[in-house]
Length: 147
Image: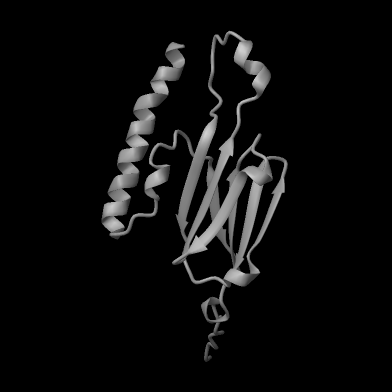
């Protein structure tokens, strides 16, 4: 199990980086009860003209084991990846997959319409579409070039 121990320093580094970002922005995004979180799924955040799109890799996590909330322009995704019961009797030579609770807090780049947020889960990917508020939608002004 030596390979598993290598990940502990990386987890400690992540916690320290999270703390630094929280101090920099002057706001704590991680609720105290989630401080013991052991892993966090990978997240992609992108923006179109009319929405912010968040994709989260959560293979093996059931939709009913996840919770999505939005407060003060921060999207919070919490959940739990449960270990399969029959694996408890197996002897592992290598264990790289994470299990347990996770939490991701994402500061959104603009104001969104909270009542129109949609979430879909397919093939282990959670996709959250957050429509922008009308005043946040970028208006493009065409520039006329004089000859």
